[in-house]
Image 1 (tube, rainbow, N blue to C red):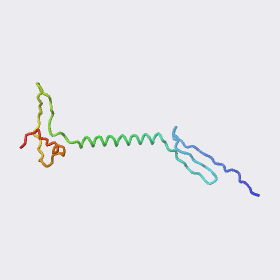
Image 2 (image 1 turned 90 degrees about the vertical axis):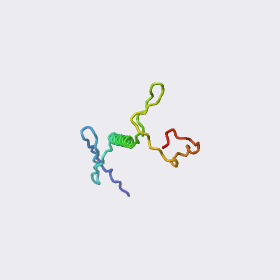
Image 3 (image 1 turned 120 degrees about the horizontal axis):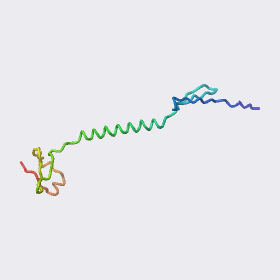
Image 4 (image 1 turned 60 degrees about the vertical axis):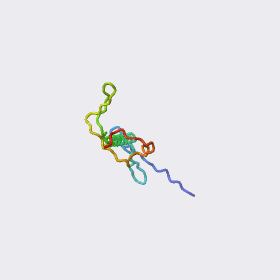
Length: 114
């Protein structure tokens, strides 16, 4: 004949901090254990804040690392002529560093040769 043990009594005691649940104590015949609650809302908010901070940091780094143009402001003057103010001539590249498409098309530079 087999005897069946009576079901063990397990008690669950919720733990809160103000209105927010923090976890629960589970008390049974084998002892008491604490099970924390994962706050999904707080986790999502922290993740969103971290992603936003990384996005801002990448945007600032990209803006700071951008090369400045070699010429100043280009404006259209009266009669349609182009005015480039407060600038020096950009440095000319040697003939070997021309882009491949310029060599294929045999394009000429529009700046004066030195």
